[in-house]
Length: 112
Image (tube, rainbow, N blue to C red; front, side, top):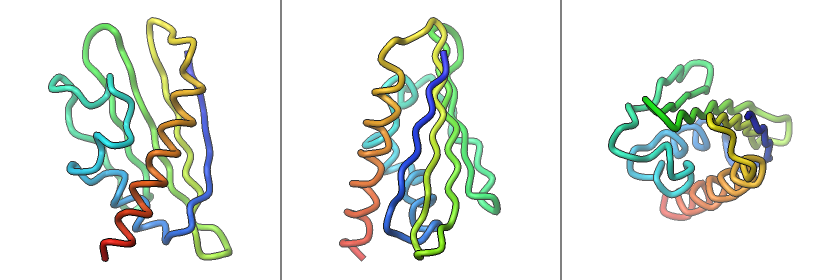
């Protein structure tokens, strides 16, 4: 099963991407199955502001994140989650994950 979510965040795209991929912050927003010890580090393409996480074995989860600039000076974040076996709450989990990422970005900006 695949679920997609999108959210605007009032921060520069680079700040959003760096917050999302910061190993010290990833556990605050990435779904639980993707933060365990059996999960390798993110596959990052920093120049394109995209990242991917995935589990090995079963259950098999993956997340793809793409951050894009918007005209107003903020960013759009797209998250695609995939789970096998299917997780019926996946759309809700995707939305909750992006809400948590937005809070992490706000905390990161206020700490600067």
